[in-house]
Image (cartoon, one colour):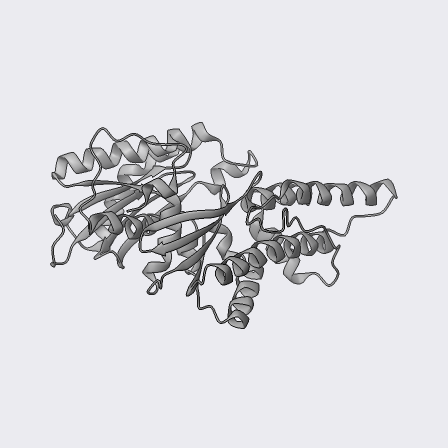
Length: 342
């Protein structure tokens, strides 16, 4: 149970195509954070195949748990609680992690903490610095694009979300059009950084007061430009298209995040999720936050993509309040971040 003494959380993350286990002391000291990626497995299919992802989690789970415990230099008997991604995510993948976590919690007779995946992305920032409230979190990942207001520790309010594709999805779809392999985001980012020309593409701001996003039209605009060039017998300028696409995405997501920070009096901006590793996005948001006088926290790349250390960081919110999950907890493919608030 929570106390003033040091405590150790073992966390499991299997929401998509990474099997990850971490051991974290006192909610912030990462003793180990082992990640087994399935990218090479799914690359041939051009995206994540849920059934294959689930099977890979089953194959690697025990090995990754053992490796994480060994690397952390602790015994399982020293673990005070088991945290696991309860949702959202691929239901089959989540189930593998949840069953493993329940089994460990029962065997060790320690509490179980079902954890929200997006809360994990947000609180990955807590592993590198103190979060100051109120804060605005810009969540950008393969499956999520949201602006979240943190009014206090562990209190989440979503003020904007995508109405169609998430940023990561849009990057992957555009990458396919530009003939890049999965995952396409890093390739598009690199090409955009190297480009000397830009095809100016539309910005989807939606309603004047909206913090929501829409990227499906932008993806269609890229495809239309490619088709237009080919119909003229020209070779599409992929680098200029990559730059135009990236500039459009960055303008909209950073513009809305900064506007939210000003409207809600945020004392800090948090960048979270796999797309937070995007160099162009990091640079632009850093510049805008500096101009606005809003301190910015961005985790290192290894804490941006799905990992179990971030799940431990979020689970720590529940641990310190003694808010544990029952052993009949279910994996949730769709799960409310606001309802998960402490």
